Image (cartoon, rainbow, N blue to C red; front, side, top):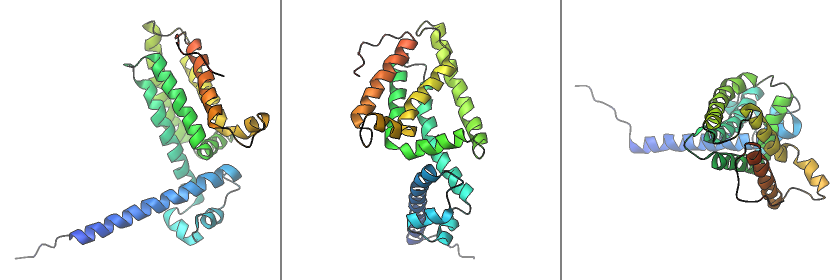
Length: 226
């Protein structure tokens, strides 16, 4: 009778450790890459530069990401995953419009404050015509955008918000919130400081929320503090 070979627990643990180590190393590489791509752009970035700043050899890095485009796409995948996760909260028709919009604006500004490099990489790709990542943006963003617009139109039909072009409302929210990452250097210069403070983001959140809720005719009992 043939003997069935079973996988021992120590072997399984070793495989798990290797996978965890690989995941961590890839995350460390992408953390470095997002900053370098944001500072230098896609064309101005080299795999060698990212490898050096990540403390790896070029050959070692290319074992995980064989090409610069593969690494670039991984970085943008992470940015878009985060962005779409926040955007998905808009598609809940059971919530009050003012609560949904307030939470979305807060989440978008938090992303700009906590991950400015990621926002800038995405912005640079779009400003450049989305030559390398346009298909992914279109295939993933458009369906979710349409779903969110349907919710807005339902709210309008129910009289829960005033009539407004939902598509351009979202464009305006994106522009206002993302500018606090993409153009933070200009804002800091105008404010005569090295970088934007937490209070600047709090003030921006209050103002943007006030503007958006006013635009959709949703009364907000809390005044804007700017």
